[in-house]
Every structure is written in C-alpha cells, then in structure tokens.
Length: 273
Image 1 (tube, rainbow, N blue to C red):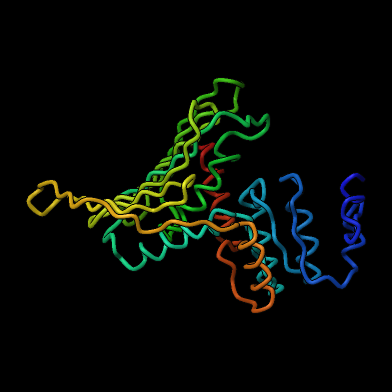
Image 2: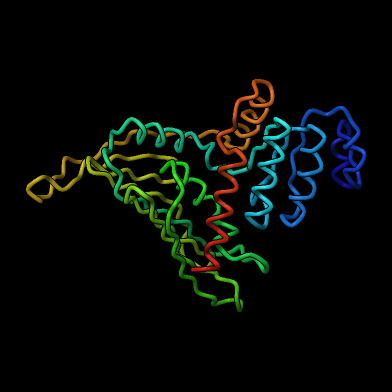
C-alpha cells in the first residue's frame, strides 16, 4: 500500500489472475522461487513473453517444462542472470571467443562476504547461482562432471561456505568459492589460458591481462600486465532493455530458458555430489 501511494501511475493488484485476460505483451516474475513455475507456465500457455528472476525454478524438471512450453508457443523466455549483462563480462566473452588466451585451462570465481545469511537456500543457490551462470556462459558448454564441498557452520544442513568444481568435455575446469561467512568482500574471476591470464575485479569493474604463461620449454614467461577494460553500467537496465529488444525482434535472449535450465541442473547436481 505504501509503495502504491508513491507510484500513482502504476496499477497494483493482489493477484495476477486479471492479467491472464489482459492484452499485455509480457510479464516479469519476481516472486518467491517456489511460485515461478506455476505463474510462468500460466502466462506462457496464453502466449505471453516471460522474464523470470533467478533462480528460474526449484527443479530441472520444472525448468525444462517451461522451456518446452515456451518453444511450443514461440514465446520469449528470459532468466534474470544479471551478471551476464555486466559490460565487463561481455568484454571477457568476446576476448575468449576471439582466442586471445588460446586454450582455456581453468577459471576461478570467488564471491565472498559476510551475510546476508539465508534460512532456506544455501550459499550457492543464493549467491553462487550468479557465478555458475557466468562460468557456463564463458565456457560455452555444459559440464560433464560437478563436484561440491560445503560446510554448515551457522545453520544445520545449510551450507554457508562452499566450493563447486566443474569439468567440461574439452578438459576445461571451472572452480567456484561462495561464502557468506567471510571477513572480506571479494568478487573476482581469474581465467587461465595457454597464452595469458585474465583477472576480473567485479568490485572495481576492471579486467587486467597478465601476460604470463609457461613456455614450450616449461620456462616461466612474464611480460607484465595490461588493463584491458574499465567501466560499468547499470546491468539491471541493460538486462531489461535486452528483454524488450528480444520481445520486439523475437531474438533469443542471452540468458534464455535453456541456459537457465542448465544452471538449475548444475545446482541440483550439487545435492548428489
């Protein structure tokens, strides 16, 4: 009620039933995760384009069903993996795809801070989901193996410090450390390739190339470092602009339903590790 008083030109509803019969083109779903599947399914079935905030669903089965229905109805289905819309990530993706680093050996992602502790989902489902989406996007394929190690310190059965290790078909490995019980605020990504190494500082929004590698004679080669990128934008704005553009052009979103379902598959596999 308080928000509705502040924003007078927006209609507020107690439920979404009336929207099902409206002439809107698309909906954005930012409700509790457990409700995502039912709400999205209802709108996709009647021909609406749908944006779902992460996590996409609570299970791979639900995620894959949403993808199936979206494709059957030729609807846009986009997932809110906001870090994919950081300009720095876009730069890194292009840099890797242009093979400036050569073969990628391994990627290391850290997302560490003190709090905010969740009582339902563990630290990977809460924080690490962003990084899993980024790692899958940069590698460009699905992992053939996922290993998980976590520690439940603050609450029983809810990991507050965790490591995820993903192995891909081409031998590339991706490692993630997520924690909400950490003394420092640290958000970084390191990418190790045969021709050099990239370091992305998410807090400072810089990408630095370390011109280091192991030579053919196994000698260390260090030719210094160079800052390749600095700058930031509003990823939420870029994300929403991308969704609108996809609605107009019917192009596939960067964070489409299939990639969102793959993130959920990886998260679900952690329970089996």
